[in-house]
Length: 272
Image (cartoon, helix red, strand yellow):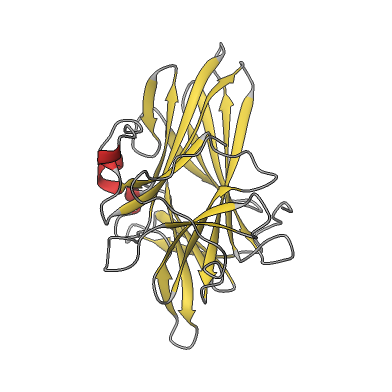
């Protein structure tokens, strides 16, 4: 897969009454992406009706905090955007980033639009997470990304797993309804992929301090999410690790045309 280029952004500042910037919005073609500065979170939308300007959320947006990035550093868990040990700021550059910084770790969550091409199946965004050890000694770091899908928010279909194209190793979670959906990469060639990725029950995961167990009884209810785990990562003093998550738009059932497989009883757990 080719590395995504610059975002070519249209930037819209959303101001509160006190004129403090709380959110920044970026658009490219039919995609709209919002960074919530005060929460350290993001939202993603797709324009399904250009004439009326109607967008639909590709991840649950009622409360952006329902999706999150968490790290475990030397055994202690920090949910970024919520834990006071990490300050939050936004870096506005070619590809904007949410930056979480503490006295011992700096985490960048960088976003870039990607365009459909021979190597890219659909338009979407890439999320590159870079973890830098700024402590005075080496650290063992784990990372957990929970994406709250729109499944279970309304009466629509469940998550499926697909392989696209059929002969490649690329694999995705697919969440969709009758209009459009989200294809979240599980394994994407050329990227640092997760140690494990699975479909999970959102409520169980959200209210857990760290990744819940994987027994058959905790498989998703209708309110489903996608969980990515990276680690453990041993990062030397001054060192860094990074990984990338790709989120594609599934418009007009473009992904659904490909072979699908999903074990709804066991969930999806992959050692990649």
